[in-house]
Length: 105
Image (tube, rainbow, N blue to C red):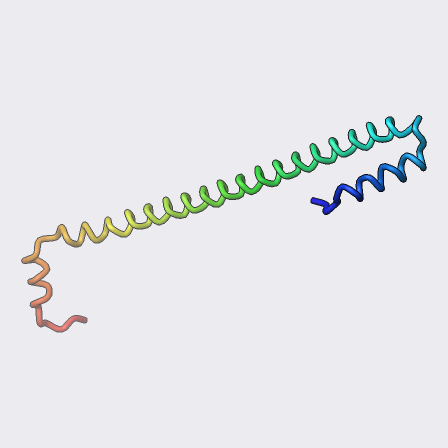
């Protein structure tokens, strides 16, 4: 995360020892560690919430696609019914209608 080396940490420790003194330094370190732990926990919660939301969006998209597919299947069934009725009609009757050369009004 941060590019901090060993000597940078030693420098921070020495400066904090000079500024805070040996009496308050352990308490300050404990407070800093506690705050760092809380920040990491909060970041983990935020990351989990975002991943959960992304998964929920994916599920919603999948459900919408499934609904669209169901609608297409329903339309296909509706369109096939008239075709089945038309093909169920006997062929001689259709042929007689086609062979009729009389003009239509």
